[in-house]
Amino acid sequence: MSSASSLPLGTLDLHGPQPDQEIPGKPTRSPWASKYRGATVEDLDPPPALSSKPTDPISAALLNAYERDYTHLTVVSEDTRALLGYLNIPRLKQLLKNGSVRDNDPVDKAMQKFRRKGSVYKVITMDTPLEELEEFFNGGVNGSEPQDFAVVTDGARRFVLGVATKGDLEEFVKRRPA
Image (tube, rainbow, N blue to C red; front, side, top):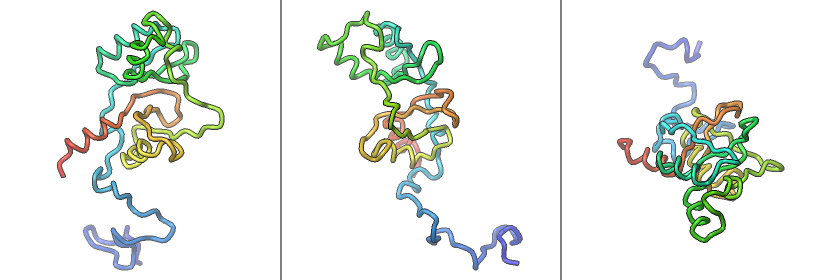
């Protein structure tokens, strides 16, 4: 009987896989694993998502972002609350500065829309390991585009729970003792 469950607590199953041993068919540990030590998106304590509607004036969205020091706002449908896109606040400030949009224009004139057709989205939940979040930021959804932020949803993608940024991840690593 060599199953791990029948071994006394604190003993090692010498016949089973060792902690750093590579197991055929099982992915090896990420080089980031020691940096995050099992932390998930929930450990970042992301602030609740702040959403705008496409018909809201840009000025209202900008004010909401400034009040909370947010760099990204989600844009949701007025009827279904479905996620339509987002406002990148630094980009929005540039659009206002160069006259592409005005502060009384609706949000939909400045928002960046999510491409739904033919796109595969990486679902980021509170349980997503930070290694996966970093990989998402560095390589994007399909490995071709870096991302600045991630929309954190529930597992069924029905509710937007928050937004995590690359800066949030960097701050987490700085705060965490080595």
